[in-house]
Length: 352
Image 1 (cartoon, rainbow, N blue to C red):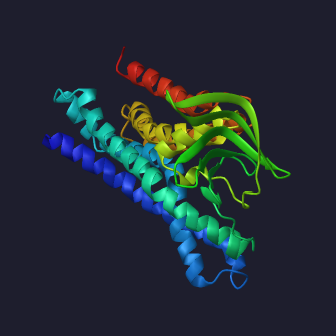
Image 2: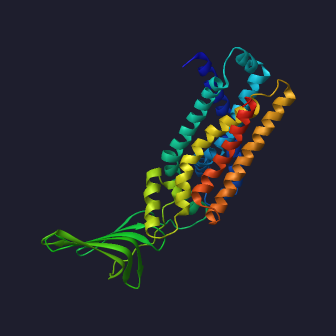
Image 3: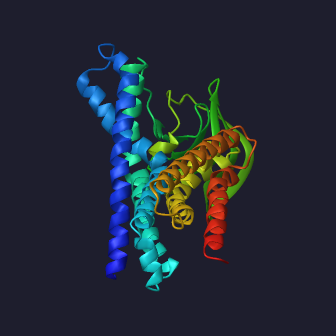
């Protein structure tokens, strides 16, 4: 790592870090104002403080592309204002040599975003939902997750897909513990004392073949084992691989999976947007002059484009959830669109 690389890399990270702290403070002030009315009506000061601290890791990543864009823009404008950018180019430093450390800073921020979404967000979101439902909205907490049901020699495992549909594994055992039947169903619902199964694979022991397998499009099983009240998993409570497998289970059952598919793509698209914002910041601000008015104009332009990116991402999510756009296209469109703009501006600036 060269001296130039370290200087640009850590200086850019410092700008991004400073703006992140400012955004966190503004967010906590705004959120505390919106929740202060619940003090004494389900919230005390300790719970309010816990709520604000837990909410921060969920809200800040949504704004990180804007933070990266503004932070890198401010740093590049500082270099231009102090004539350091011109000195570097006059010394034969190529734009790629200056862009690489800035991209590395964006990559680090993107990795932190992914780590927060993968390991921090699922933990804090569960606690936040509990505070929101039980202490703020006064609702009864409903259990989430897999259910195990047992009656005599029948065991049933239910994975909630929707409030009324489950993925089912049913095992029947004999009196001496040997298994008699196994049923795997992509979709199961319980109505009037019967389990109604779709795409059910039935496996039974066979004297010659070891076991036999049959597949039924639909299958009804009378049973007194009914499911308990349960909520489906919140996509923000799940890691990437959990989201992938759950989305596949919903798709196999023919159920709506767009909410989980959107979150699945978002976990990858959001960190990559930080790299795109770095390229966009450099393309916009590297060629600006050293005058204070030009610097203010560059910062205002960066904030405006960042807000446009945020609005575009939010609007496209609404269209995806409303089934007006394919989910994958909706998630990746803002990245592709702004990458195209950044690439065009960069090539134009460099005279290509």
